[in-house]
Length: 266
Image (cartoon, rainbow, N blue to C red; front, top):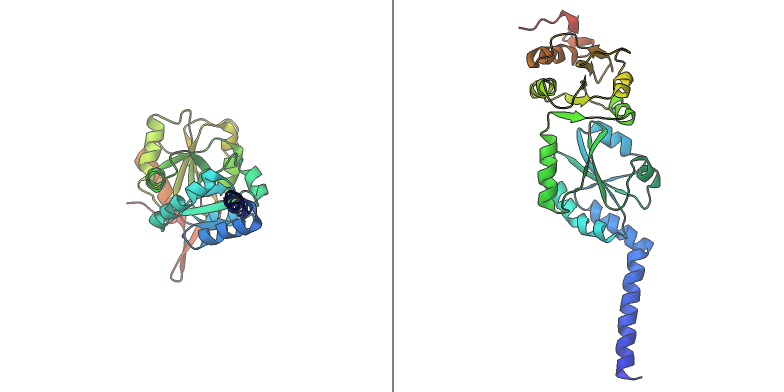
């Protein structure tokens, strides 16, 4: 056999094996094995809702194993997961297999990276697919005092969250009212604050039909009780309201039971 023919056959066989490896189930398995050895969390339809609702901040990468850009992102995303461990859960979904989740969260193209706060998808990551860029963007997001929700779908996600949350309904997402809510949020880092201007979102939280903005409501995580704010829309009044109502309707200390309404702020 001529030498040129042998070289051609070797090159052809090599290219064929690489192609089969990339697009075969063996490659898909290998991709997950590499990811699970790092700090990323693997999500599926079975555990997705639980993980994003239970954890305050979650970033989710909807990837496709055969996608060149997904492959580029994978090692950088894993490094970012290590650096952000304990602050944010960096998770991933195989959109090639989890088609129900892909459709539900409208993951178009690969990779698609979404940011969840208290179970609500509040933003999409579109910056550079590098560790430093991911970490910087994520740290900026988790430092926000107030997150914006715009749809009934987001409101429904929020109602399932396993956190005490505050929703402020206003005429504008920027301005004095928004600033007062943001300032109050800094005094209660254990509570997640959101804002909205959509009347449909307000209805989902049982605001009155003819709501006058600004308005504010708190949902306590254990009892899921909704408390409406009626004081002046200023930082300290909002903070005092949250201090009282973020407690369960009845709290137990030792053997004595007292109602949260019996508390007096000093």
